[in-house]
Image 1 (cartoon, rainbow, N blue to C red):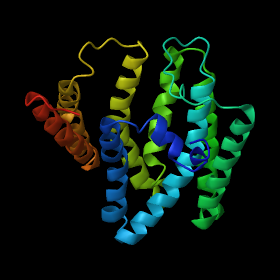
Image 2: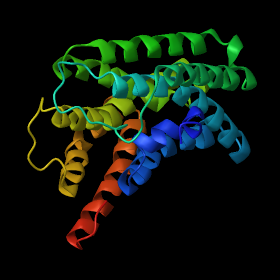
Image 3: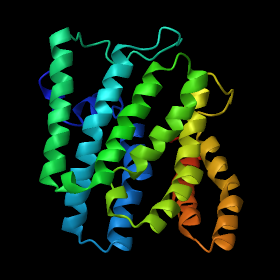
Image 4: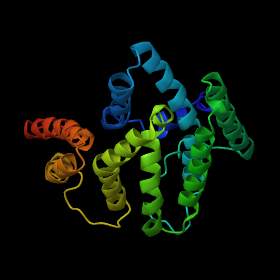
Length: 254
């Protein structure tokens, strides 16, 4: 198991993508939207889209897993109820070094193989990602961490696609992601850390009504900014949550 965890994305799968709900939620909420942007906006072929996504996401998750690893092994001593995601694995100091070095190695592999090494925005992005995740892990309490969590959610959403986007579309994507992805993730994070109290947050109705109630603000952006992207994102997520809500009425939900 420890040797397997030296490969990219394996730690993420073991510690975060280890339930049916997570296996459905993450691809639908994070991966499919950026894949559709590559296909529909950039006009990439299916092969180009798959290749670019895998290279960019491989580079991203390699760095991000170092942050996950540090967060799981060295949780803040001020944070109560920290989830023990690695309780079934005993990590020695030498393995920690190998884990970090393997992820850096994989990041460099994806970077140079994809030809991203000559793009300075690529290096800026990942330098900032390291800074933000370090701040997130070092901040003393969750009451501060929500700020860095918001930044991390935006970076993880845009990581597979930002390098291919023009400045104008990138700004549009940020607006759409903040309103429809990061805000939802932030509310869930704050509730899980007891910063917010939302009694029915874990019910399928919460996500449905969340997206239903932010339709107007997305519609407002569509009218004022003449941009349908945020509203498209909102409807896309709302359909998923509505389907799950209907399943819950039939006593089966994700």
